[in-house]
Amino acid sequence: MQVLSIKELEKDIITNLREEDDFREFLNENSNKELKFDNHYTGSKELEEMDEFAEETVIDYLEELSNMEVISDEDENNYLKDLREADKEKVIVKNLNEVASIAFNYVKNGIAYMDVVQEGTVGLIKAVDYFDPDRNGDFKNYSKYWIAREIVLYIENKVADIRNEFKNFFKNKKENFGKEHHHEHEEEMHHDEVYLKEEDLLPTVEAIEKREKMVEKRIDFFSLENRLSERQIEVLNYYFGFGKDKRYSIFEIEDVLKLESGQGENLFQSALLILSTVEGKMFL
Image 1 (cartoon, one colour):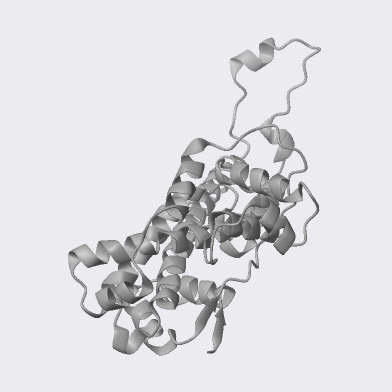
Image 2: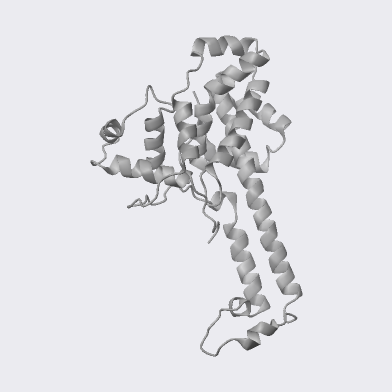
């Protein structure tokens, strides 16, 4: 089977495949290619020490998925041949762990993991609605395309909104440059207190334009790195059994991944903390 990199698909989604009809046509021609998630945005450093524990909401959700009794592959294939509403729900439930696993690849700064899961679930539902066994081949691979599409568009749209907010901010700063007045209370500051004012950071129109270009370059979908490292994603998938033959204990994970004793627990706990938090400073 031919392979399509997720990086290639992301570029196509953002530039050419925003419309569902275009994406469906693309899948009719390419769903025979295996979609490969290659963790191309990972590279963050794992936390060395853990002083906090992950929020229970995320842990409970992942535990529920990993322990859920689902239909067999044979039943899934039968349901997909003649989908009724009740059968659709069973197929969706069976594949929720795929959504959770793919979402690990999109835990970026300022992006909440459960929001990514929600968007990925929308993609899974669309995959079930649109799937044609005669044209689209393997459902699991087909559904990955839709899950990735919805997640990518969600993040891209969020990034675009933030980029526009910055553009409006800098536009306003340039239009009103030199017109701003200090507030009266600033004159009442004590002489021994030092405050960094906005004009210290943006003293000229040229400085504003330079900052504007820098921000626009950095606020881009392809500039965002995943907050989870590749090893953390591997540990999570093994621990919860996503895409594996079973759930693995921390000891078994350390053995499979050839980690030092205690390193598996460290990676697991730090990954859960990341999944349960959203970094407020998105692009700093």
